[in-house]
Length: 313
Image (cartoon, rainbow, N blue to C red):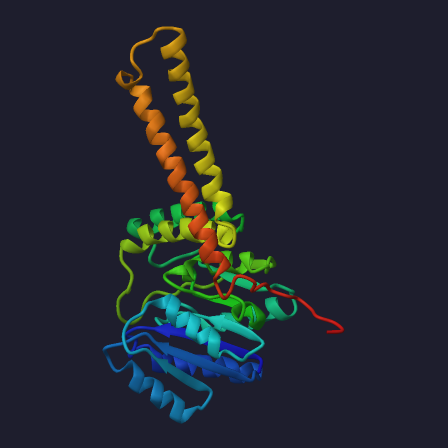
């Protein structure tokens, strides 16, 4: 199969028939063998009925329905599990992503040698202050911390090799950081393509201000887990040791001052309490590292590594 198109959706009954017809037109024009996996993330409108209708007319359109709303990351993850095409395309269901971009995105994977290509909506139609400024700050922080030179991490229109989507797990709200997940999984050929951003034709946006706060929190989480997930003691042990040694050094200094220089009583000096606090924090961090190591060692996925090729085995 040439292509799998994964489309997460929530209450998009108005846009689905037009989007389905547009995708079908592009697929037929290019002669692709394909499947479209529509993941209904607990919609409360008639979205699932529309998906069933699309499937009746064209078996290439398939559906996954959630019992309730779990979020875009969960929808993408289930779509990735079901995907069979050599190239996997993700796009939003609100008609702001153009299916006409699909052939070139696929070519960048097949002929260009990329593992992943992310869309960049250079010219936007929702370029309001509430979206523009936070989005630029978010993308700048993501570029700086991850080292991946993309302008738009959160663009829904992306293309992947099948092997990539089978090697990552998208959870929580990590759909914003799939390029980072891909990099940590060993896929480093990540490209970018300027794509068309179309005005919203149906419905309203499903995301509010909280997505920016959650986005920065998730960035910190994914960078930490990616670097220290299998060796937590390297983080907690280091900072625990530094904090404990700082407290111990201050405590030794106060002791020497007390007995050799006849200084004011130790317990009457603010440094004494700072030393005790630093040693307690250091000990707690060190213990947190031990607990993290125990969890990591007993995890069933502790030795799950991506292997490129096996020969003679």
